[in-house]
Length: 255
Image (tube, rainbow, N blue to C red; front, side, top):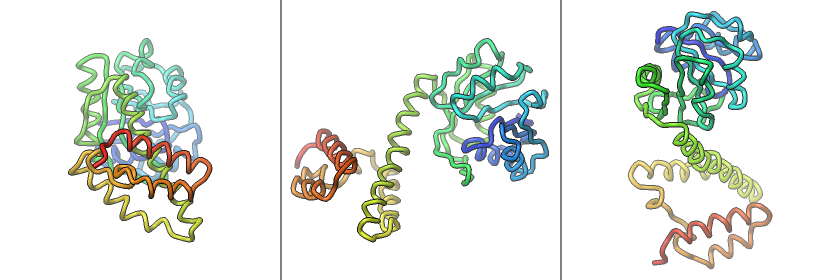
């Protein structure tokens, strides 16, 4: 995979572009907004940015579609099959979006949270790949191994499960941190006080399962503390605290 085209300039595309630029030639960046394509191209030293799908270079080895899930099918339909490898990066969309449109296609799904403003190192990110045949799967694997040492096979159903797990692990966890920030702000306290706790909680997962590392009043079935916390909260914070507390209690045995 010596020459790669990246279709997209957002959260996922930004980190992929930076990761690939260190290992092969990113020959072109596409975005619906030319300024965004040019910004990303300039950042990685690519001299070809475009906002025209019909202007994609025809002779790259691989084309990575890293756009919003609901735009993947439109990109596929608007571009011709040139015999190269085409992949999308979605966790929730099936590989079969390419069926009937491409001969060589697959999925390269990175299990990570990305932000356009922050380039995420990809060396240890787990990539999950899929392709319709062994030969194409080998090509997708080669592309993935240019980015990370963790490349695993997962079919479309498995990727959907991964995506649900990621929402619990990342999106919901981040929302809980948002609620914690609001609780602290109401008390005139900084969220920085939580950061060592969050880091320690995550670091424990290198040695323990999530269930083994669970602490707090719910796992102790400490109803006095739980009731005191509930009395301090209202609205959705109270509802979420109650729901998660009940879930933890239902999964643990009182000492």
